[in-house]
Image 1 (cartoon, rainbow, N blue to C red):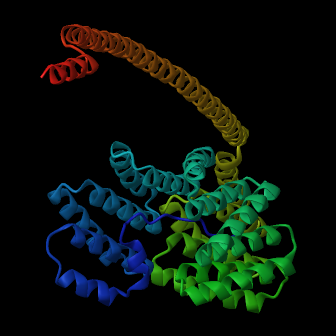
Image 2: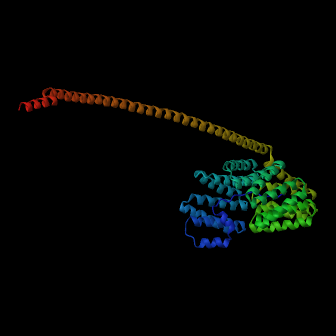
Image 3: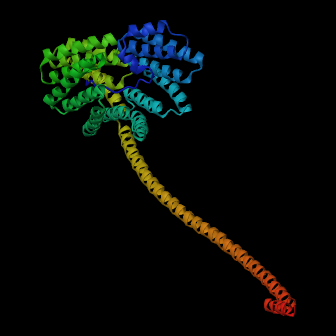
Length: 477
């Protein structure tokens, strides 16, 4: 059985801090915190931290405590984050029905608050659970829902993870070319944004496709690159995954000692962190390895233990391989009744996962997503054209309004000028009339003066006359 990694989305607002701080630091913060929203954040962070370190009881304890406090505070955001973290806990334990319940409860809150980013993240986590249950059309449906939101918001970190998870669905259905295409798309985005964890997972999943294609050297090259990054990141789950897959590749090359070495290291880590799906997968791989060496008792021992775990957690995609391997073992032992029973179980599980209807639904979902995407692009292009046309219309209206305003202003100014001219003309007319009156008065006055002078002159003797008379008087004396 191939082991590969899907992306999960931790939605606590404190999760980034939790990745940087050790459990002791968080516990110290918790010890001095009040019964408020910050305490809920710390409890959620501890829930994730304990889950990652495999301390599952403590993880659930702190998750439930955070949920209870968030409910008491009536803090919906904290409640949704706590529900999501508890869902992650159940997913890690293989309790898929419980994980779905918590995720859908959280989704309801985020839909009420219209938090698109959180909704997109939960869609991906829900898709992951359905993938674990072998319900690929449902998984793909939720992945595409998440992809649509993240493309619209250009949320590259989540976009890369969702694309990688879609690749996993195609891988499960045997469409290796589609799977590889999605893995490389995810890798490109992860490298662009510097997401080392994403790069690590994408490298490993690309190695998985090459292994499935029989390109073992290429597979090992990608696996060891992924393993090196996982060790740098100190991610136990990733280290375990790539060790198990390296074991698969050595097993395919019939390098059994090396294969067992990597398998056992992987199982040890998975048991530490409580990854039951990982334990079941690698136990099954060891069973196949012993079968290839014709060691039937050892093979049967590991495969029965693996089947018991995968059945308990409801991991259909793992169960089917265990049934097939056990069928081969019983057939070699000439126990045809058990061989047939196990083969029937394999067919049943495999049909559930890869039946024609599921494949048809997967193709329909892919086509619907592509159609919706093209439709959205066309609508966006039309909206862009409409927006340009609207702006042009507004621009023309502004020009028309400006011209009309200018003409109106010109008319007003013309009216003012004409009125001013009219007033000036009337004033000039009055002034001219007044001038004529004054001149007429002046003329009358001057005429009066002249007339008076003539009268005066006529009444008074002239100087010569007076002088003449004076001379006469003098002579008479």
